[in-house]
Length: 433
Image 1 (tube, rainbow, N blue to C red):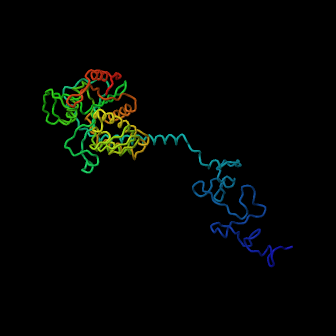
Image 2 (cartoon, rainbow, N blue to C red):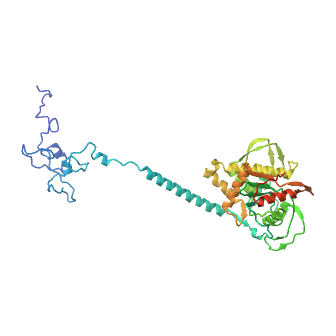
């Protein structure tokens, strides 16, 4: 029974349907014109494993570079094609279960090699960045102070002594800046802050020198004229030495009145101090008691608060709001420096280049140091200050015994003991005011 629709049968269904084509040539030969139809294989002479099907021409193999497979003749099949190992590339025997597939798979990643080159890349980037940062920072240091001009210096002891100065320099400040920061417009510059930082093996020590300290101006050589000025036993406030002939005379005066050798000098002005505070995003500090000072612009409530550059400068400069004006101010200065050092050294600053580099730039732009001071010395000074103000060391005022003519008189016995302990790098036992 014929199930095809009327008019259709196995012989008139047309080419390409059912079991085969009714055309003279196979469909593949008609579609693929580049395939030539070879002579038909007589019945009973074709087939067999590895032989081409009847009616399909043998295809050339491109093994020997000339278009034909060696060992098979010009019309021979490629052995790989005949054996079913077109992709396996085997030896001609039957293919294994995974033969050929595993050979073409992507090799497993060499994690040891990847980790090695990743580490090398990171180290290279770190080294290049560190060197570039060092060169950049070193180029920004203002090495303007020449301690070789200081005469009659005491012998150096153990450890390293830094004289750290905060001046009222208004260099670089516009009239608007001066008004905003309450700096006034006085010519020249004076010292508002003076500290000796001793860095040694038995603990670091930070000693504040009140600006009103009574000191004697010794014989000294002019920093610009080179002329020697004889000392006449003249007593002045300590900050007057700086006003008279700058950093070199200040160092000479401190060394003469203490007997302590100063190894390095570092100074920062009003504008630079405020910029550092702003660059770090403000400094958190706890103020014990509310106070105001119209001269410095201070107006603070008690409690924890964040000070910007303008407020920070007012805080460390205020002296008229306190009974013991200069001594209380030095304590506030040490307290604020501790908070500032802590803020600068936090991961949020150190690991954030958008905060770290502006902070470094602001500090280095406003910093004046001696000619022999390098970045390693500066870093040592900073970390020692941070440690001392954080409790890892001694922080104190210079011992005071009284006053004369409005000047604070140092306690000579205590100062002598303190200086001997610093020279020998012994643990400091002296206490200050």
